[in-house]
Image 1 (cartoon, rainbow, N blue to C red):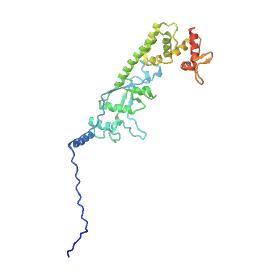
Image 2 (cartoon, rainbow, N blue to C red):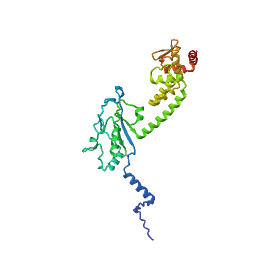
Image 3 (cartoon, rainbow, N blue to C red):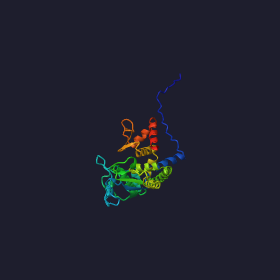
Image 4 (cartoon, helix red, strand yellow):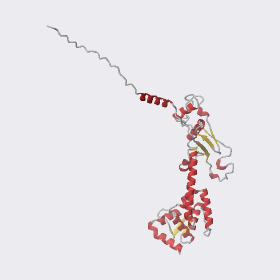
Length: 319
């Protein structure tokens, strides 16, 4: 009988070689491009100029020509350095990308701009000198860009923009940085505001009482009731030239005509004025827990429920 031999030994699996899918030519180029971009420092310099301006302290009451005007002596300087952190280390004024690019463009050794450098630390010897005169920084120049970043790091001493100075002022600010674009925008806004001012002046140019009220509100003193229209127009033109924003705020006040009524009512002794407060028939022109200043009194008379009271005052003035 024929014998059959069954071989139960497991056959070793022969591992298949992993075959990589060949890269398409486009994929190779993409990978190469990414490598080049990754190795190339990103340019942080800007084609801009920034003017660092001294912020004078006006409380001294000195003339601008006085050497001590603004709280700083002519010829005196403030020396600004990189601020220190609470742990005693130097604050880093640059981002990693800025550091890498500036080291490359300035042909410095790698790590030369590191704040952690033990010897010949670049930042320990860097000083930005500021006086009463403007300091102009060209942000396309590496050394000026570094000074700009150092100033930005001094957040209590240096205000970063005119907008911040107007909207978020600090008592500690001594200087403000003004970009060329800020100067252009400021000039453009000033021109636009002046145009609006003259439009509003044209609207009230024949209203003696309205002109008097605007002048009194801005100047803070009474204008003679017999003042000529031409005199008041000239006075308002001067105000527009010196402070167009203030003029625009006052002349476009929705309560202006009621304030004019109050001014005339005081002159005709229909309303009494005690200090800065306004009264009619001995009663304050305001709601409960309010003080009857001219703005509060004007709002009070402008309420629908007090319409008859306003009409009554106007009738007595015109009588």
